[in-house]
Each structure stands twice: as C-alpha cells, then as structure tokens.
Length: 273
Image (cartoon, rainbow, N blue to C red):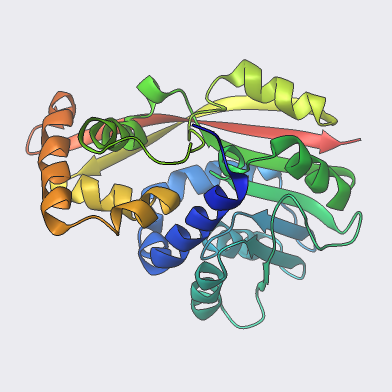
C-alpha cells in the first residue's frame, strides 16, 4: 500500500470541513492543552502570530487575547473550517487564510511566533513544512507544537483507532499515524534537523472524562478530521457496531459511573536562529 499525499490532504480537508462546528464546540476538552502550548510560546502584546492547522481557530482565538495590538493569522487547508472560525471570532481580531503548511503564502520573516496544535504529524512532507515555518519566522522567533504521545499513552485517540482497525477493512490508501512524533527524541531530532535551535520538549497530561462510551465515541469523531471523513461514509449499522466495540475497549478506563482517559501530549518549542 503506497502513500498518496494529495489524497491524504484531500481527506483531511473534507473531514475537518465536515466537523468544523463540532470541533469548535468541543474546545473545552483541550482547554488545558491549548493553555500549555500558549505558555510555551511566550506570547506578548503586539506580536505577529501564525496559527497553522488552525481549523476553526480555537487556538488562534486564545492567542489573540494574549497579543493585544498585534496580529493573529489562522491558516488551514480546510476552508470550511476557517469559515466557521471566522463566524465565531470577534470582528477584526483574527485574519483567516487558507494555505498549505508546505507552501505558505506569507512573506519571509513575517511572524514572531508560529503555533501548530496537534497538526505537525498530519503534514505529509514535514521537513518542507518546517522549512516554511522557519522562513516566515523572524530571527529569534519561536515555533511551538503539540503532538500526540506514543499510542499506548494516548488512549483518547488510540482506543477508537484500535476499534476501527479491528472492525473495518484496511484503508485503500496509507494514512499518516497520529503518533508518528510520539517519541520525544524523534521530535527533537526532527526540529533540530530543520534548523530550530534551543529545542525544548515536555509532556503534558491531557485528562478527559466521559459519562459514557457514546460520549467518548462522539468526541473522537468530533476531533479526527480524516477519520471523520471516512466514518461519515459508513452505513449506520456499521457505525453502531463500532460504537459497541468502543464500549468494550474503554472497559479498563472505567472510573465510577464514567470513564477517565489520561493521554500524553508532547509540547515542543524551538527558536529560529
């Protein structure tokens, strides 16, 4: 099975356009993670900030509150998700620009900070995307990323994916793993190879509670772009079967009347020399 980057991006675009409103409405699930990423970015009033893989601009809206008098640009390949973000943002607070992270349309040294929350692992050509981020950063500017940790330590995503792999036939085209940068050493090596200096990585514990397996399953579907596109094409009977499988997969995470899933996310920051 070969990897087709154009097809992969097309599915991601379709998926994130499809779930844009629900992704934005589920922002509370990731509130602590977003706050940790923004702290690592060391934002200051007046700065120019680019938020890549922004979707409906959840992270961008928080950044805009911290750079009063500055500029925040939310960018994504999913134009429908950006439209949802524009609808939710205060007028004039954020600029929304559809762009591929591997081919950014911004001038050199335009931004003080580049943010990328849970997006880097879904860029087919990571070295090219990182080179573009360095290009648009001012000298001394910081790029900050969050990525899922290793699969066994990220059940928020892995539980659903395990069920999908067991029940559904293999995909026709290879997909990028959400855990591909789950090892801190690999992530650090990748950022250093791209020319970022003073790379710092720390783990953030993302703790999520769900009242039922159905609530977890819906949260996953509201978070996973490309997977959401594929799931939307399944018949209701198959979706119901997946929901039943999820209930069994979640059994080890039962806590009282609900379910608690703690997942590791790596937050990395690097500086353009």
